[in-house]
Image (cartoon, rainbow, N blue to C red):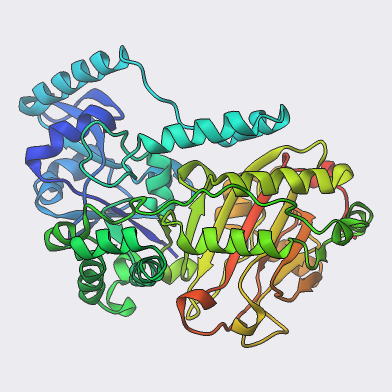
Length: 485
């Protein structure tokens, strides 16, 4: 199937301002028929409602010449999801041509880009940076770097002037500020209500600006999923939506960062963890101390940093938060460090590579078959057991098969279910299925294919299935990876 990705559109009056930071290339090419020069500009468009679908020949000069007026007339554009073109899919880049008469603004934008290049730029903290800090046991430096960068980004409430724009990689993951989904807005409403009931100052802020009511209005405007087939369930904000929640959607309204409790782990639960890992995927029960479990769960329930929404028709319904985009509370990083020290043989040589958290909607399926780019994968489940309506399920299915050494990250992660099916069939889908339990950590070789098991959880914000994932080290696959036990 061809999945379409939404590309946002910004009004003409603000295109030049957008190009200052978002212009990817400006290449001149001769148009064969009349030698008219066109400027080839990759721009990000801000979406409203109507959609124009680009065919596979969308980058040919003939098609662009004939359809250029239609491109500019439409509020948003759909791009076919072609596995051979990761650039388009991952960066939501749409190719547009402007005539020679418009090439002046391309030149002016290029000059502004050159001027901006001479100014100091704050670099984001990458997964490689996280690993480097952990490798030298510098949690203070990592926390400072993550907080400093996040405090300067467009995630902060208020006007965007002077703030760093959202990185293209974040927008491509579903963490943009100009589109959403019904389940994401429903999560945000429930979370804001939860925080307001526990924090008087946040409640006053939300009431002053009628934030919850604004989110509810936009949520009611989103049509049913079967009416959003062209965008696979994503909803591009209309002008009235932006007017309602543009200053509040995907902003860091409340980001608690308490002093980590000690100790964080039950030492007895980890006594034989290293030996058990050698035998294959396994679970550690009662992993966190009661105080640590309560602190970590409260952090994830309250922190308004779950910016990612997935296409509901493709990936189901879950919201995500990642370490370089707000999920950097000191308690989470201390937990990663404590886990590494508790399993020295398994994790000692593998610094933290990545950290994320997902909260699931009870009406959708979980994450499909995939493998993760790391050596060791730890999944921590935090929702109370009484929220799980089927105690025999709701956990994780870990297969014994791994992607071949020649597989790309796109093939074993983004397209895992499609790419892995033949390989899994050859092993008769042999797997280890570990049911859901609160305060259980599932540990396994991250190169193994795995997926979220089917689940049924109670309705209600506090009953949402919460999964915290920590990845350590670099992936070992194919002939370099040890066999699963």
